[in-house]
Structures are given as structure tokens and as C-alpha cells.
Image (cartoon, rainbow, N blue to C red; front, side, top):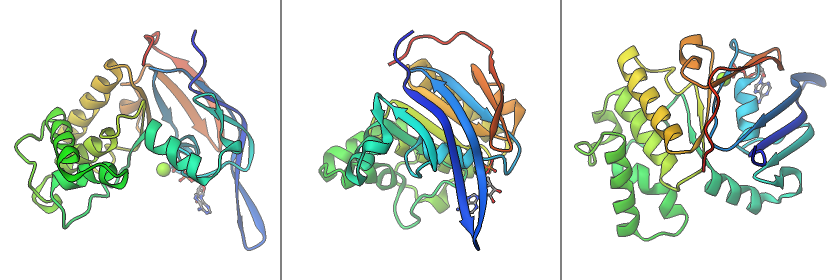
Length: 235
Ligand code: ADP
Ligand code: MG
């Protein structure tokens, strides 16, 4: 198989509060290849979001080795970390985190504007991605004028606009009704079919069942790594 996209060895994460150490991740060994569709499943408080934030380079581990896209994360400075985050990773969270005063298109084009792309080009790209998530008729709606499921689709379009290889979803259907949740899961599967690496974090077995591989996490440790369908080679 190709070189792993994500390789973790002995990853720990501790928080220090009032002089006490709270160890949240207790030694995670994890390898994920390009194009995999993986769910990280575990109960609330098991360390899933902490792990996702480390995978996505928005937080740093306490100990252990993390290699992402052949780069040892420890050796990168802030700018290089920001660069790898922007280029490689799209985030989707449980809360949609859209900016209320902007319309759907502007919310989606923001990452491109931050990268210095011009208004018109970024707006065209944003529109393409809104169409892709089925919101072609909601481009100028503001978040408050959209349902929860539609807002999450805007957030997915925003996560895709910089064309990341990896999509990280932290309980992306957690705030949605069943039907909207299914819509969102369909989009994740289609992203997987396009060859992207999809990593979904969830406490819900039914959501995890959508993935090709389920990594069970409990009390900061991987309890079981379950391959359900053989992965295709990806991007
Ligand atoms: P999950 O996403 O599986 O519900 P988290 O990774 O969010 O779990 O949290 C795991 C544990 O780490 C929890 O006990 C939580 O209280 C603790 N924790 C998370 N973030 C922090 C933080 N910034 N400071 C202190 N403790 C934290
Ligand atoms: Mg969480």
C-alpha cells in the first residue's frame, strides 16, 4: 500500500488544571492511508475531539510522533502548520460556525479571500461548491434563512473550497434531524468516492456504520480497529 497519510505513534495529550495533570489521550497508535473513509467512534468524553484537533493540526500533542503527508508535525513552525491546515484539511464541526451577517456564498468564499484570492474568482468557486452540496438555489440566503441541514451543507462547501485531501468531521450530524443528517452523510460518502480521505468523529454507531473502517476509542485509548470494507486507493 502507499505511504500512510496519517501516522501516529504513542500520541498522548494532557491538560494541566490547578496543578493536576488530566491525561485525555493515553498513547494512540494510528495509521490512515489516502482515500480511506474512517469513523472514530466513542462515548462522550473519550477524547475524540482532542484527537481530531491533533489530527487537524489545530492542537498539538503532548508526547508521541505525528507524521502527516510525510511531514513530522513537530518540526513545523506556526506558518507551516497553518499552510498544511489550509492546503490539506477541511473541517466540519457539529456547530456550523457560519457568520450570520454574510450570505451563504460569502461564508464559503471566506477561506479563499483569506488566502488572497480576488472577490470574483472566489465567489465563482464558492458558487460551484454550493451547487455541489445541493444549495444552488440558496446562494444569497443568510444562515438564519437556512435550515440546520442547509447550514451544515454550507459549512461543508466552505470546508471544500480550498480543495483539501482530508475532510475531518466532528459530530457533523450531531445538531441535525434524521433526514438532514442522512443528506450530510450522503455528501461525505460522495467525497470519499471522489478519492478524498474522510475522517468522521461520532458517538453514534449508526453514523459510524457508514464508514469503511471504525476505530473505537475509549478513555483515551484505541480499543478496537475494525475494517469493514477494503479501501480503494485514493487521491
Ligand atoms: P469527546 O470529543 O470524545 O467527547 P473530548 O476530546 O472533547 O471528548 O474531551 C475528552 C476529555 O478531555 C474530557 O474529559 C474533557 O473535559 C477534557 N478536555 C477537553 N478539552 C480540554 C481543555 N481544553 N482543558 C481541559 N480539559 C479538556
Ligand atoms: Mg467531541
